[in-house]
Image 1: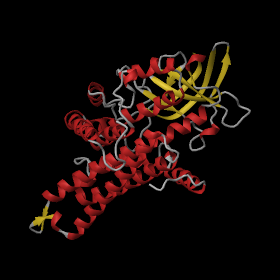
Image 2: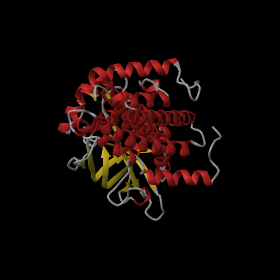
Image 3: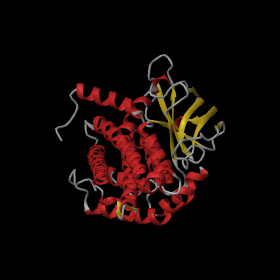
Image 4: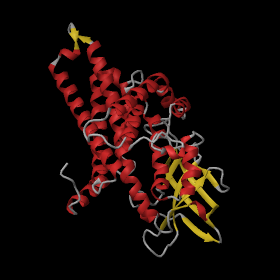
Length: 388
């Protein structure tokens, strides 16, 4: 599935969209409000996505996965986010957590862990951020000290998506404190002695996806669980984000599309002054701008997905651009969707209120949009951008 026009998804991609949408309409969307209200993990969605091979579609067939390319994976995430943003973090974070293993892990690590995620035996989370190391990831304090054939890990990771639910964690830790970015990556398992979790964060949105601290207290793991070579972890982390920022863009597109869908439906049904409010030009212009922004974000996201699949030199620029533009679009479109619904949009009786709250995080995680603009500017100044 790698030979497709950059701006035209193949018939197979369109079939994937149809299949994912059917699963989401039946088994994800009906539980979205309940998941948000109770701040509960969307187990129904997880079970449905695993059964349909959509929980980690990016994992290769050689490890028991569906072998979906980057665009297909984005379409899956987009469609799940259209129904429930919290549930979309199942495939999105599975890709985020496993991408370091895919990019730099040994064949033994790939066989051991990717096959389990593909089979639905556990999710994979990504542990980079810390209390004192957010945007400045290289300032992390978590340590991994070599002890014979093992490493002993100590530290705290913060803002970890699906922490406590995931069985597996990619953990970045300092292995050489005397050099900046002397960082290595490891696979840590939930059941390893010394691993524990903080209380769930009380969040504005994506309430169904738990966000917790991960505590590492003398966690001893085999050196065989190091991902790649020692001290290469920071480079692996940055390469990972180049690819997975595209999935956050897809999530943002899905949230925006869901809000637009509800706004359109409401505008055609709601009547004022003797006719549907969709007949009023002022509202039509608002809907037109919403649709235009969503489609522009989608096209940029798909262009970035093509570069992710090919691992193009300009992926860093396009990943940052897609994530930044699509998340800003998600915020703008969900705000306008609430406006279209008026007072109803401000209540929990309609989903656009939830979508507005969910959209905000897409401007923050995997690098704030201010950081994305720094990344883009550096790429532009270095002359690393294609002519499309």
